[in-house]
Amino acid sequence: MGYQKENLGAYGKRDRSSKGAGVFAKKSLGQNFLISPRIVDSIVMAGELKANDLVIEIGPGKGVLTEKLLAAGAKVKAIEKDYRLIPILSQRFAAEVKTGKL
Image 1 (spheres, rainbow, N blue to C red):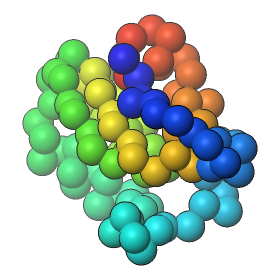
Image 2 (tube, rainbow, N blue to C red):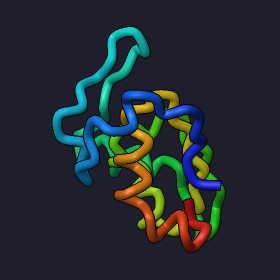
Image 3 (cartoon, rainbow, N blue to C red):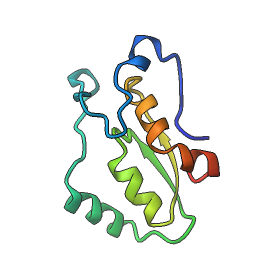
Image 4 (cartoon, rainbow, N blue to C red):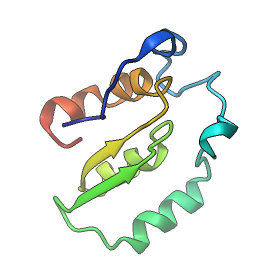
């Protein structure tokens, strides 16, 4: 399934870097990007994930939590509303999308 994709419009060509440099949180979407490794690790630990557990991630942002969930062995279904982030996430996790882990 990968990332839910709608019409990318003008946003699809803005930032294609693997880490999303230059993409700022949109106040209109209420965004806050998760960047703290300690918080990310705490979230993953609290989930008590087992291999192949399914995690539905709403608003993966730049993929910081997504990366750790996948590393923990989870299968992730991520839904992103911000069109600017879809190409970044698609590029960053191309292998995981191809193998069906994302």
